[in-house]
Image 1 (cartoon, rainbow, N blue to C red):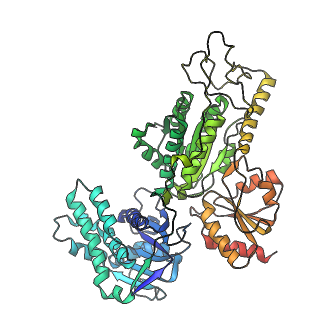
Image 2 (image 1 turned 135 degrees about the vertical axis):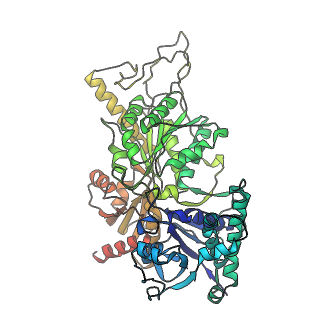
Image 3 (image 1 turned 90 degrees about the vertical axis):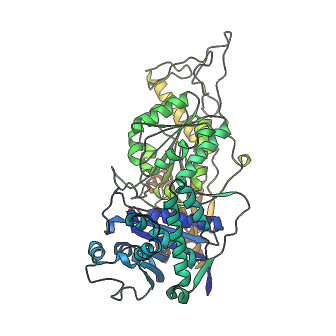
Length: 616
């Protein structure tokens, strides 16, 4: 018996050493190749060696795949793979009632029960706790040891294949092929044939176990058809990969070399890792000794005529603040991709938050405004990084592009655009000057207040550089009070004029006027979109708009805010954008904060919408 479903949400959960991230990634690759739409959310401990068997040591990988558009990994999941008791205890509250649990019974022994807090002799598999769910008890480790007994591998290495056994069961349960994973294993372990063969055998054994055992055959299987998508070439990307590719595409479109100066930091390091593999495309990467060196080398590369970028997370953005002021007063292009994480200080390094908006807006001494934009999805990280590059190059300014740990490490299918579909990026270089030409004026501006990009070594373009205030047009060092005021205003006006090229804010869904507008930014997009869609189906007068451009705001934002009786603003912080909206438009939106190191889910936002509309 095979039951068709529109979408399914699955959670792989176990200890950090159980390979849940790898397992989830392989499952995501398979459903992507099959043609399903998907959205993933890896969630793992901040500790490198989290205590095994405990709640704090649980690592999870959640994904939702479907035959229709998927915007979140699912508010609740339909299937949970629990590799031990702690994994079950940590996640049971988010499993749909009646959902499926595949429990590795070898992870529910006395030791694991004690470490998880259940207590020896209090197994949830035996005390009726799981009576509302469909439970498949599978001694995964025992079965893997039997299946791989003739491989010649050590018991330790055999046990490492347990995640592949579970993956095989899932492939059978959801009528998915195992060939994609087999090819990946062959490639991943091409220099370790015995390891490749063992993992492949484990996947096949798990698939056969699902096919041949009575517990699964009585329950039946499921299938989720491929999604209807526009024709073209697709690839699965994480947000960090998309950001890296977006920078590379922008450099190619602008005819510039790309330079990234970076210091590794969770959860932004994959941008550096991805770009370091793109040398054949002329990409140069520099792994610096600290955050200051990372941004300062990028400033040097920008001064030399490259599209320069640096990536970081909250603590690193704080360290880069003085250098960003330097880039701002020099008026040279620089892209800063800030992958937000839980703070303050070291905070929650592997958990997402939206708490760097204030530092992105105001985290520089003096009047040093820069454009700030925010990505909305893993794929949108490509387009946000590309647009940040365009603004930086064409307006000769640093630009901060905000993503977060949720977007950076999550993934979804991306329709690869052709170069012709991408907006042009046109650097404006100062031209070589001849002996009879008038003196070069490095800070002479066009109608947008933008100066030309002067490349060192170009004849006749010699001028002063540095962090001291420059004289209007000549660029000479100036301590004149009125000149400083003029230059400050000119730099601010230049950033304000970026609003001339950004599109008007559009209503994503819902009426142009009504009772409630849900205004979001960044990674809250998917959860808000689904919540508003459900509320509209229920007859509510509610709409959704999402800000990509936070500084400057779209010109029509004030008009849109005035078309609704109330404005709700969900943020993964204690309320930061809401302060900017209050200050700019003199209205009183309703804040909705979540600061748990977890993204919003659609059910939370839908419930808040319902509560607000009841009071109108």
